[in-house]
Every structure is written in structure tokens, then in C-alpha cells.
Length: 435
Image (cartoon, rainbow, N blue to C red; front, side, top):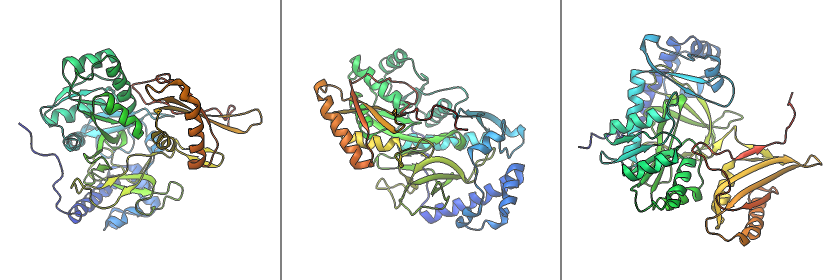
């Protein structure tokens, strides 16, 4: 029997905002009184919990960053006694110490609840068999996907990452209906399913993926090779519970984020001032219920934009665009700020090109910057089309990004596949120490 709905029941945006204000006041008071680090931040900003009387007062609060979490290792920003902590998760990050996050039992229950909400929004039921091909261990991914699947009442098949033979065996023998993975793993499995002739022998109907960006052409390819499977982009980060903090709705034009659990601001990453509604900026989040490690104006470094109005799917939950990139994966070439997602978009609009690519940045003998884009041809495209496709790609990049790039078109399947995040940018312009 299908359980009661996990979806929120707010009748109006005003009702949601009243809930958010109550949560904001609680969070600020909880952080101020529970954490010496937060109290110091608040004191330095000249604000006390009683100053927060409306949602507009959010801007008075100090920012929190990844450095705060690393500097406070191993139990940063802890706001409850150790006796109330039931779990630790960790984010690998890219430099320095890990970012450890503590969870109370209520934190775990809240996370499981709104993650189950993601599954429900994607149309899963107790009849589904969910193959969870993501990492387990200290990571939030595996246990997050699995716990919510079990809360929903669907069958969890924890296959873990990698091991293509096992993944294919599970899909065939267990007749999995849903695959949870990264976008790169989704493409790897789609190509493997196609290569092994399994598309008409398996029952994957939905793919829930996260952890990295994907182009439209990549999504189309995964769907096509899986026989028309429907794709849902799911968002989240270890700092903010883990995966499941938002998901693409069945109308596939946005991410609904769970505004009853956290607030979102979109700020200019340089000035830290709000950008006009609908414009791109850095997502900054503030939790409303998190006990062990609440986040107050946490700079995620993710680039997105708020989508105003109510979604055609009928949900009142606020929306943001799919993540375009991060402030820290942007690169500057010939004084132009470029995100890999810009290349994603260009490649998606050129027929006969594949979705796999690499961006190589280097310097020539005259120390001039060189950008070389290596792109696969689409499957089945004849090799004699490479020159035409390369010339077309160079022209489009010049027109869209106002820079000149070299284009190298390679055979389909020649770039590496991985069940993990694919590395897109290889920058060798600086070979010696910067200091």
C-alpha cells in the first residue's frame, strides 16, 4: 500500500513564508546559544537573535563558508551536545581537511522525509525497484538514497558505484525500474546497456542523477540508450544534509527546492549583494530545522538562478534552475569568464557531436593562451565529418563566447568514461608555483 504523501501541504506562499520565518528565528537562536563559533560571528556582525523579526532580516546575518567547516574540524559549528549526535558524514572537498557534518536523530529523520519527497515528486511508488549506484561509506549519497527509498516503501537495490557487470546483472535479473547515479555513471551504463543489447530486456523507466552537471545532449543520449527512460536531476550537498534537498519536477523545467527546510538567496559572488530576480548568481542557503550543524547564509559556490512564479506542475515549492556551474570551476580565457556549462550548451546545439568533451588550457611558445576543446563525434557519425564539425564548433564558440578555440573532433567512445564525476577542464597554463 502506498504511504501517505511526503509532499508539503502549504496552501499559499504566505503560509510557507510564515513557516520559514518561524524556522529562521529558531535557527538563529539555536546557533547563537549552541555554538561558540556562531556566537563570535554574530557578535562581530553586531546582531543578536532578537533582531530577526522578518525574513528580510536574513541579510543582517553573517556568512558561513567551507573554510569555517574545515577550520572547525573535526566537529565544526556543532550546536548540540555530543550525546545527541547519532551520525557523522564527511565531504571529501578538493583541498585541506575534510568537511565533517554531525547529525541528530531528528536531522536524519528530516533528511529521510524530504528525500522520500523527491522520489514521490519523480513519480516513484512502492512498486518500484530502485538500483542505487552511488557511493556508500562516509559519503551522504548511498545511505541517503537508500534510507529514503525504504521510507517511501520501494525496493532498494544497493549496488554501489562502479562494477559494470554487477550493475547490468542487477538490472536484468532484479528488473530494476529506477537507476540512481551520477550523470557520468548514467552515460556509462546507458552505453553499456546498448552495447550488450539489454535495452529491451530491462525495465529502467526513470534515472535519478546528481553530483554533476549534464548537458541536454547527454541527457537525451542517456534516455535514448535506455529506451526512453525519464531523467530527474536531484540536488544536495553534505553540508545541507546530503542529496535530496531538491529535484527536477515531472515538467522538467526547474528544480523544486524544499523551502520549508531551508532558505535560498542568489547573490553576486563578488559583491555578495542580491542579484535581480531571474539572474544568475551564487546560491547561499540557510537551514530552518537543522539541529546538529545549522547553516546560516552558507556560501555553496553553486551558480543558479531563482525561477519566479508558480510551476505548471502545481507545486508551491520555490524553484531554481539546474546548477549551471560553480564559482570555483569558472576559468578565465582571454579575459572572458567561461563555465563548462557554456560549452555544454554549445555542444548540445550542434547535431552530430557527442556529449563527451574535454577543455585543455595551455600556453604556446609565445606564452599566449591556447584553448583546445576535444569533443567526441556522435555515435554512428562518419569519421569524414570531423573537419566539418570542428570548423562549425570553432565558429560557434567565436560567436557565442567571443574567444578563439581550437577544436579537435575524435571518434565516439574515445574519451574516458567513469562512474564518478568526469574531469572536464585541464589547465596547464601555470606550471610553476604561484607564490
